[in-house]
Structures are given as C-alpha cells and as structure tokens.
Length: 223
View 1 (cartoon, rainbow, N blue to C red):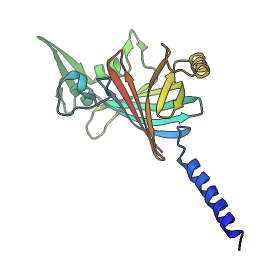
View 2 (view 1 turned 90 degrees about the horizontal axis):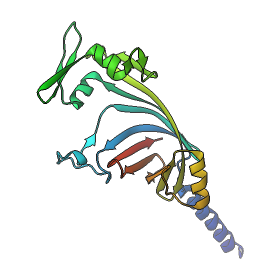
View 3 (view 1 turned 120 degrees about the horizontal axis):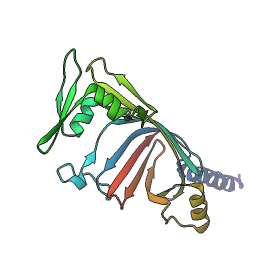
View 4 (view 1 turned 180 degrees about the vertical axis):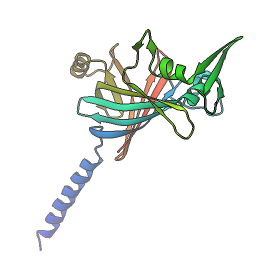
C-alpha cells in the first residue's frame, strides 16, 4: 500500500500529458469548405447597418468542396456556383422571368442599358466564350427545373505552401518562398500573405486581410 501514492501520482501525470496532447489542434487533415466570404475592407468586419461600400459583405454564390492540409501544403478542390438571377441582382439589374422563353436581365449604366439573355449569361458570363475560346474551360452549366434559371458551376483547384505559428497563418506563392521564410523564421515578403486562424476540433476559420486591395477573405472549414 505504501507504493499506492506513487502509482496515483504517475497515473495523474500520464492522464495530464494525454489531455495536453489532445488540446494541440492543427490544420493537418481533410476539411469541408462551408463558406468563402469576401469583404470590402481589410479590417475583416461586417457592418450590417452601413451602406458604405468598404464595409459591406460580398455575399454572392455558394462554395462546396474540400481542403486538405499536410504539414506544409494546403490543397483545395471546390465548386463555386451562382445562378443567373443571383448574378443579375448583384449587378443591380432588373430581372425579367419569361415563361416559355429565355429569362433576361437589364442592367443600367447611367443613361445606357444592357440586356443580358440566358444564352448571354451562359456563354459570356459563365463560360467566358470569346472568339470561340472558353476562358473558363472547367465551368459547366446546369438548369434549375423549379425556377427555370441557369446555374453556373466553376470547378476550381489550388495549392499553397503555408506556415502556422500559434494563430498566425501565412500562405506562400511557391515552395522557394516557403523554404526561405521557414529557414529565416519570418513571414514577410512579396510572395507571402499572412492572416489568422481559429481552430477547434470540428471547425477552422482562416481570415486573410489584403491591405493592398482593401479586402479580406474568410474561409470557414468544418469536419
């Protein structure tokens, strides 16, 4: 029995170490992309009561897909989807649903107006066809049987090198910049952009301000 206190102390230390290990959270693994939001300000704040351009949220389209992190890279494979009517409203246009015919959108620019037809949306906006060349070859068009509206689906992928130091998250344009930054223990330079990340067991929020363009991207990830 005289060894019991020592055994209890050892057991307590083991349990404490296990709990500490469980509290260490990181990005490594596969995540679902819940949303990607672009804000028109570098402070990454949303003022819902303001109509000022630099404080509004660009809530346009929907994102779905996955993002997978290793110790050094992050790779995203996702689809950005938006509808013709949604695009029309974002442009401040007048939506004209036509039963049995093509829907259309009229956008005014001062005293001038431009009519965008369903075909125009599909070919010019979604696929980006210019002189029979598609600017977005990975884009596809689907049709909503309920609204009769066109849906544009942009299939996208990208890969970045990154570092994570506490809550400071930095992305690098290429491996060379990542290696140099890692060896110099710095996150500054033209080939790197830094922000912050909040991680829980089931979610992660990456916030990336862009001082040069006065914008901010917020990526919400879930398990």
